[in-house]
Length: 130
Image (cartoon, rainbow, N blue to C red; front, side):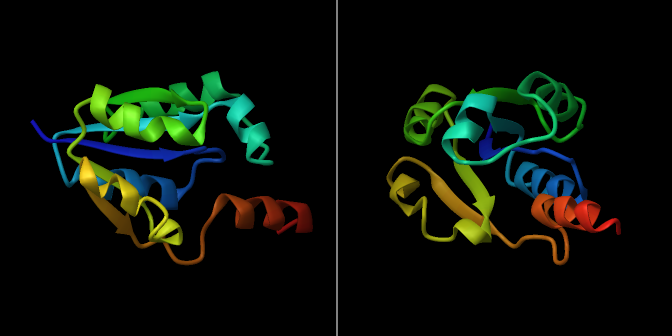
């Protein structure tokens, strides 16, 4: 069985999230999602509309997602890959090069983002009343 992992906040779920989850799952049989905790989002200077527990339930309801684990610090990725026996690490190409150091323990793939959509754009559009 090939296992894949990706990470994110996955707040205000949109088609870009679904696209990356679907594409990540296409590389293997089992998709693990490292979901940023509320505390980790604070460290990253990010805020999410939905709390961690609700974002986790939403992700678990998506057919491409097999398991959701908490992401509470940047440094945990290597341990997650080893502990969950991950074959491929997947992130959006806005992170290109940032996780190449993981290529010694698994395959690293950067996928193109969905054009014209992001949680930041959605939040900004809502502020503007669009």
